[in-house]
Length: 238
Length: 99
Image 1: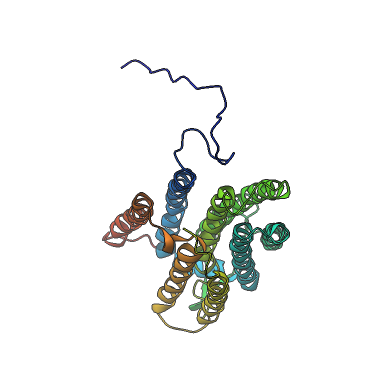
Image 2: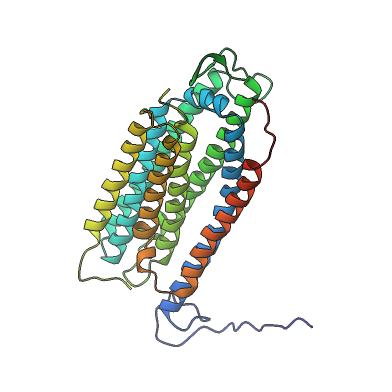
């Protein structure tokens, strides 16, 4: 049918309510639930986005298990483990930041947001060290890729097929790279949250942006919780 | 929504400790030969950690809105469709690519 024209009232409200409450919501609770729901729907699309990559990983891992194990063994495992711990600590500082906002502790809120960003930067730094090792070893897919005479862990005397190993590294770089991109976006969001907190925008009644930003941060943490064992710990015991 | 009477801090630190313990366990178990159960144990620990984050840090345990529960449930449902239907195809093919 024909497009309906919505007339947006330009006059401001005279009602007595929180300045954070937008005019198209009945209550602050409803507004918060709507924001929350919107974020979870976005996270649903993110799950499917990463899910496709996990699916591709599972198919190739099944086909080229030995080659994947050999390629996985070339990654410095403790860097990945350390990064897992760093992200878990950052998730703790996020919930502590929200708690600080709920209990009107501005200094603690700013400290926790700063610590979250610090952990985020530490994660990217450690990731950078790991990537540098892969570049130095010519394990980056492309013209200079090389993975010759790398033994398959469970089959001594058998060498990994470099082309199959290259598929592992392609998935490794796409999945960790996409995850790192999400971390960079998260750092941007948290810089903005820090700025808002600095200006004193968050109160025990209104701190929805902190909760929404927190949901995003925790989601990125969950992706890493799966990436770590799947990429770093294939057949390590052999 | 938020219970100001009792502090959630205890829960937050307990979950944080459990997540670090889970990470340490995954790391150590990966170097022990459990045969086919190595990836199973790794995924069970990862899923436990993911659940801890989702339930306590993302506050799903307090979720009261039915629409939100529906979104979360359908997310998991569609992810499982993606993974299981695709993998049942690949796993059940009579031919395999020679590696």
